[in-house]
Structure formats: C-alpha cells, structure tokens
Length: 113
Image (cartoon, rainbow, N blue to C red; front, side, top):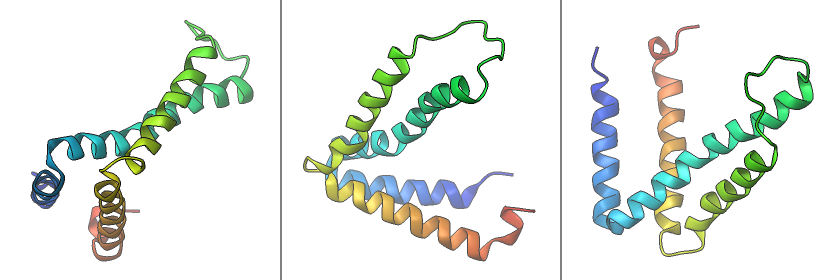
C-alpha cells in the first residue's frame, strides 16, 4: 500500500519550508532532524562497550571516533538555533510533534499492538 497521507504531508511541509526559508533552511532543518538519530547510534557504541564488553566484535572502533562524532552531531543539532533558520527548525519540531500526536490518537490500525 502506498502511504499517500505521508507523501502528501511531506510534500506540503517541504513546500512550505522552501517558500518560507529557501532551500538552505530546508537542508538545515533536515540536518537538525537527522543527526540526533546518528548521534544515538554513536552513543550506542559506548553503551554496548559498557554493558556487553565480552561480545565478539569483528572490528573494534576506537572510542575517539564515536566521541568526536557525538560532538560534531551536537554542533549540527544546535547550529540551526543559532542562525536564521531557527524558526524553521522550531516549526519543524513542533509540527512533527503535533502530527505524531494526531496520528497516535486517531489511527489505531496504523500501530497495531
């Protein structure tokens, strides 16, 4: 099944961001929403090293690299609030939260238990 509601929602939101803030604002907003998940993966390296130190790993990454990535990711996450696109980032976060709240409360077949 094609997720037509999601496609339409993303089309409207993306168009609004391009009209309001230009393509730079859209790129900044996308970075803002993408990097927390990448940072969470890097944090997972530290968590796995602490909670499961004996698990076999084909390659053991030096902790310097995930630590550096976490610092970079935090910069990318915070940076939109420092420039012109902070309003776009705020609208993105609030809009996503409102949309998720709406979907979770009105669409029981979307998330079967």
